[in-house]
Image 1 (tube, rainbow, N blue to C red):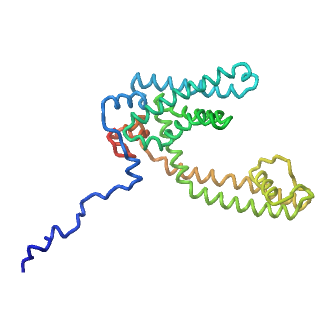
Image 2: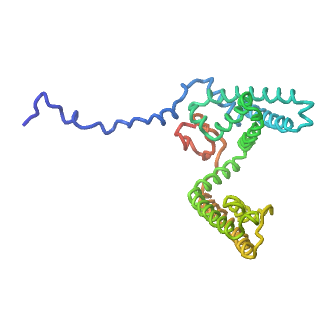
Image 3: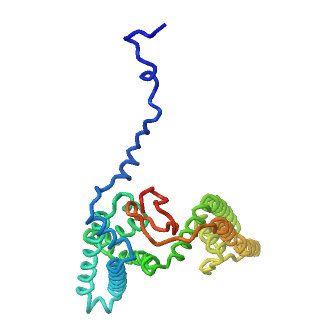
Length: 302
């Protein structure tokens, strides 16, 4: 029996399974990109690459500016220097802040996916390197946070073509990330132990020996368990000293636990290929394999 003309055909009735799923709003926002243009590629080559003379000159000049700006902030914090050269040092800070602001805008313009770069590690560091100066107009003293610019010096490994260091840094990052859950559980156990030890010491020693409350006793437990031992508060009774001795010995065992966790993850992560310092034109991510043709993070053509 043939279908009636008014009934939909079998092909029309079946859902379109090959149509791509619509991207989420967050993904679409992060994947937003500039249109392709030769001048943007040229700008990216100068700012993000260190393989060309222009790119290397730009990066070396940038590192010099970072060192000088951090030095100006450090010197401005010295009272004797600030009294004589304070206005000059603040003018230098503003000059470098304006230069870094222009550089940050150029980075966003030259990268194909500006949001992906702005939310990356170096993108956040670049933004934080200029915010304190503008924030100092509202909150006094925040310009001292400009020393965060020193984090931008991490680019020296890429600029000097030290690809092996880039690879080792990524290996360490992967190992720490893989250890995150284990270390989180470990810290939870340690915090619980500190609470119990602090309560016990408060019960044993009491306010007459300096342990005026449980938070104060927990402070002592942290200092003792980490083998720091400031000595500003100490047990006086025999039972308290016995507990303190146990905590000191326990501290050595506890400090060894996170070291072992990270070491095991490092051994598991050390199975990669040699890496290159070439950055992706779309997301600015580095650390690709030497024979890679596409970015391992966003899929763009290298």
